[in-house]
Each structure stands twice: as C-alpha cells, then as structure tokens.
Image 1 (cartoon, rainbow, N blue to C red):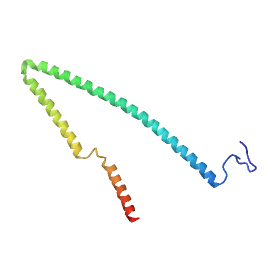
Image 2 (tube, rainbow, N blue to C red; image 1 turned 180 degrees about the horizontal axis):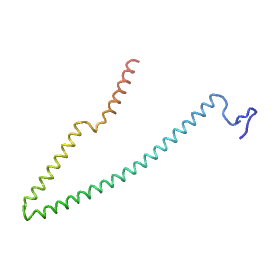
Image 3 (cartoon, helix red, strand yellow; image 1 turned 135 degrees about the horizontal axis):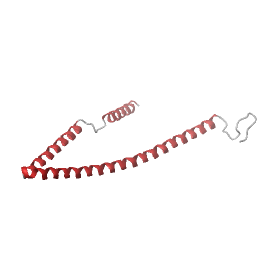
Image 4 (spheres, helix red, strand yellow; image 1 turned 90 degrees about the vertical axis):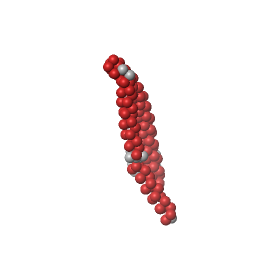
Length: 137
C-alpha cells in the first residue's frame, strides 16, 4: 500500500463524490451478500419442507393401513355375535367421523382463517393510499 504525504492510502478515492460512490458500491455488495445468503437458506428450508411432507405422507399412508387392519380385527371378532350388522356399524362410524371432519373444514373456510385477513387489509390500505395520492396529484 502506497501512502501519500498526509499518511492516507494513495489508491483510496479522493473527494466526497468518489467516497460516496465507494460507499454505495460496498453497501450494494453487502446487500447482495445478504440476499444470496437468504436465497441459500430458503432453498435449504424448501428441501427440508419437501422431506417433511414426504415423511408425513408416508406416515398418513401407514396410519390408513393400520386403521384398516384394526377395523378388520374388530369385524372378525364381532362377526360371530353380530354378523353382517358389524359392517353396518363400522360404516356408520366412519361416515359420522367423515361428516364431523367435513363440518370442521367448512367452519374453518367460513371463518376466513385461510384468507390472510391482516395481509389483505394492509394491501387494501396501500392501494387506497396510492389511489388517493394519484387523485391529489
């Protein structure tokens, strides 16, 4: 590094404009580094989420097999006492269970839990503010 008579680096930019340009370049490089890091971490999070969904789907499939197996055991054990009526009882039980799940899903949709109400309200506010600014100009 070469120093001038005042003890400053001779290669350093001189003047406020040059220093502000160097500062802006460094700030831009820092921001780009942060964006690249965030993109890398988001990619890793996406991969972990995909693995989690795969494991969850396999778990649900195995749970369905277990449910079918236990249903077969109940039917086999109750068949001597109830005969074909046990099939009716099992079918009625699963039907009632399905109706309860569908009613819960319907109430979730009716309460707008999936609509992101706070985000949509903020976006509507932004749109209204921009429209007011445009009409005032």
